[in-house]
Image (cartoon, rainbow over all chains, first blue to last red; front, side, top):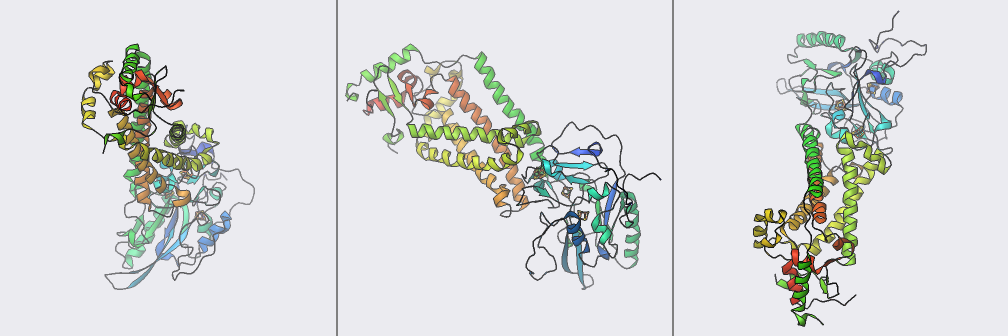
Length: 323
Length: 228
Ligand code: SF4
Ligand code: SF4
Ligand code: SF4
């Protein structure tokens, strides 16, 4: 049987025989700070992780699985009275259940919203756009946005570029970390660890197309149960994402621990990485070239013999100035 | 402000021959070289992170990680050394009416008719412009630079603030590099200027030609140093 180019599910047990990685340099469609990237020879099927917020029970099995698979060691923190733990995404915690207690003004019911936060694997990734280091951030044709740590210089530009506030810079090795969408598993036919660990199948993985179909069924179900605004969060402002949510209140994503309503790469970042760079380089180039040309072609401003004599005379004329 | 205040403490005439005039003492010159060196290092390391086409410049600092780590420290050095300078020079760089006249005839200067311009004190309008532009831009750069110095201040400000800071930082950096080019080129074009930064003195003729009022005052106020 032909091996599909990406795993179609996280549920199935993976093949056990050794496998060549299926995500290589030749599958890159974007590479940070690189203008001349050769187009990939093939187009991998786009994959996506779908997180159904309505099915999540907040057990954090996904967080544990992520720690386990990526072999990270998030610090043990103090309980500050909320379930969210650790307090934020960190360089050792790529995904985080964010808990929100929200009173629905229409029903006066308390709703406990639990959102699995982490990298959205944007089709138009702001992190990659901001990164100054060639090849520190790459995007594969299956949609995964990955950080290549050998090339990372720890500048934190990706943090400013990301519309979702995801990357974190390690205080230990000064490199940026975030969810990889388990690119190292996907490359060898396995679904993401978090999706595999999820006991309620709130996290599922597959081709982006399949995930959208699955989301449609879930949304129809939610609507039939009174959630009129249920919908899919696949924000067009970043050309869609490869981690999507089914939200029961898709009309107001912000209630889910500040999930942006209309995420897009900030215009400030666009200006910094766009017009500032080109106009700035032109300015500096003109200043340098202009000076050089004037230096070669123009006449320098030289002190003449007369100037020297006039100065002597001025000082002579003031004999009191000589001690 | 009295006229005497406009004359810097170390400035003095040496009768010679040849006739020379002290413009900068050894400490000021040493400091200026620190300013110059840190600004050049900042420009190189900053440009490396400004555009991918210049990323190779990180090699001069031992790679990207080192460049990222060193750049802010160069900035601290520049800030301290420049502002030592600033407090020594700001009075002499205050804008006067003569500066407007001088500026309005700048075409004559470039065309080689400096004699048509008014007599000047220690600094002309161009030098004053460089001084104030550097002062303002360095302030913008240090403030925005600290905001985006994530190694130590990542948690001090929100991401929205950092985005504005990084934009301001890159715009100010472009401008200061342009001012720097102007400053260096003016020093080269105006022959005899560079020795003020190496030996600290200029020739009498240089002072007569470019800063005649300053020379007159020095002569008038008995500012004559010991012969060398
Ligand atoms: S921290 Fe690393 S990944 Fe992030 S922008 Fe800088 S070099 Fe790129
Ligand atoms: S969510 Fe942020 S870190 Fe992830 S791909 Fe999008 S911009 Fe990059
Ligand atoms: S996809 Fe992998 S890296 Fe990302 S949150 Fe899940 S387990 Fe962690």
